[in-house]
Amino acid sequence: MFVALGTVPTGVSHAAGPSPTAGPAGTGLAWGFNGFGQLGNGTSGPGTDSDVPVPVDLPAGTTITDIAAGSSQNPGPHSMALTSTGAVLAWGNNFWGQLGNGASGPGTDSDVPVPVKLPTGVTITAIAADGANSMALTSTGAVFAWGGNFYGQLGNGASGPGVDSDLPVPVKVPAGVTITAIASGGANSMALTSTGTVLAWGNNYYGQLGNNVFGGISDVPVPVKLPAGVTITAIAAGSGHSLALTSTGAVLAWGRNRSGQLGIGTSGPGTDSSVPVPVILQPRTTVTALSGGYEHSLAVTSTGAALAWGNNASGQLGNGTNGPGTDSDVPVPVNLPAGTTVTAVAGGGAHSLAVTSTGAALAWGNNASGQLGNGTYGPGTDSDVPVPVNLPPRTTVTAIAAGGCPCGPTNGRDVNFHSLAVATASAAPTSTTTVRMSPADPRPGQPVTFTATVTCDAGTPAGTVTFLDGTTALGSASLSGSPTATATFTVESLTPGNHTIRARYHGAGDCSASESSPLAVTIPRPALPVTGASLPAALATGILLVLAGTTLVLTARRLRTHRTSD
Image (cartoon, rainbow, N blue to C red; front, side, top):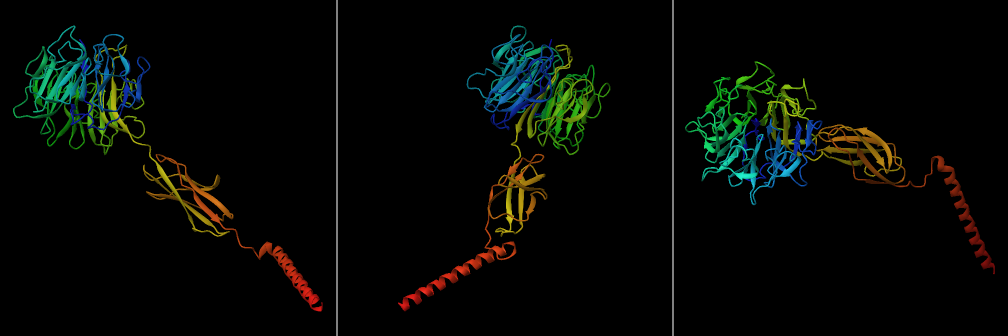
C-alpha cells in the first residue's frame, strides 16, 4: 500500500478559470527533497536537495499558470505544471506512469519537465496530483487522469493490479455533468460540478468519499452526500480526509480524523466521518480558500488571516507550538507576521505554505529536506511559526504547492517533502539621471554649479553622483531629497573652450546606476586684457602700433612734399 498527498496550489483547489491564460503566467520554482528529480532542475538523487528555491527547467519559451505537487512513500514524489497554452508538464517519479508521457516503471523518472501526452485538441485549465496519479480538467469540463489505479483513483471503471495508465484516460463523469474544479488526496480523487455538488472516487477506507460508507473503493465518481441546500464553491483533499467550502464561507470536512484534521472538536479512533460535517469556525468567520495536508488542514479567511487544524508534530499549524499534545481538533490562527495578509495556502506532509498579498511566500513546519526554503535544513530547523521563503530578488509568487509524506523511509530518509511555486519576475528597478548648469551661460572665470537630479522606480535613490567633464572627474556629491533626489557640485571656473558635462549616478540598494545625457558647454575666450599681468605686453604692442602709424604718416608727407617741389 502506498500513502499519497494531493495539494491545492491556489488554496481553493484546482478550479478552472475562463481560459488557461486567466492567471498570471510565470516561471516555476522548487525547493526541498529531490530524490526523484521532483525539483525539475536537471538533477536528482542524494546531494541535490535544495533549501532555497531553484528554477524549474521549463522548455524554452514556456510560461506556467498553475503547479501541483504529489508525494508517495512507494516509491516517491512527482510534480506538475499547467502552461499558459493549456498544456501540462510533469517531472519526478514515474513508477506508476504519473508523468503521463507513455512510459512507466524503473528508469523512467525525469528530472526535467516532460509534456503529458494529452489527446489532440484538448486544452487543460486545472491540474491536481497525488502520490501515484495525476489529474487534469479540460476547458469543456471533462476530466482526465493517469498513473496508479490500484484503488480506482483514475475513475475510469477499473481498479486493481495491472490497470495503471501511463497516458491520460477520461474519468467517467456522469452524463450531462460539467466539472469546474478537481482535487487529489491519498489515493482518492474529487471533483466539483457546475451546480455546486461534489463527486468522489478511489479509496474509501476512512470514508473520504463522503458517500456514507466506510471501506472499499469506487472506480467511478459517486456523489458526496452534502447537507440539504448546501452549495459548494471549492474543494481540497488531504491524505485521508476531504474538505469543501460552501457558498456562505463555511467549511465541511469528512474522512479520517486521527489528528483532528476534520476540525469538529474531536479526534482519534471512532471520530472519522463518512459524510460531510461542519468545521467549527469562530463566529463571523468567512473562509475563502482551503488546502489539505497529510493530516492537517488550512484555510484563508475573508480578512486575509490563516487558520490551521489537525496534526502539529512539526509545527505545521504555525501557532507557535509543536510536538506531542499540540494537535488541534478545531481551527487555530496561524501566527502570521504583523501586518501580513494571505491569499492562498498549501498543506504538505508536515509543512505548510502561504502566499501573501504582496506576492511573498511564507513557510512553516517540518524542514528536514529544506522545504521551508529559508536556507536551512535538517534537525533543529523546523519552524512552528511562518518564516519567509528566500525568493530570488524581485520575484512575486502567484501559486504554491506542497508535497510530502511522513509515512516511512524513502532512500534511507523518513520524509520526502518538497515545495513548488509559480513566480513572476519584475524588471530590475531603473534610475534616470539628468544634469543642469547654473548660470546657463557662464563667463570666463565665473563659478559654475552643476545639479544632478536622480529618480528611481524602486523608491527614493541614495548614494553619490560623480560629475565629469569628458572623461575627467570634476568631483562627487551625495544625493538628498525625496522622492526625487538631487546632488550639486560647484567648480570655481571652466577654462575657455568646449566642455562635455555628464552626471554619473553610481546606484545604491535597488536603484541601478545611470548616467545623464551630455551637456554641451562653451566658455568664450576673453577679450584682450589691458590690466594685470598682460598689461606690459599690451602696452608694448600699442607703442609699436603707434610708432608704425607715425612712420607711415611721415613717409606719406615726405612723398607729397617731394612731388610738389618737382
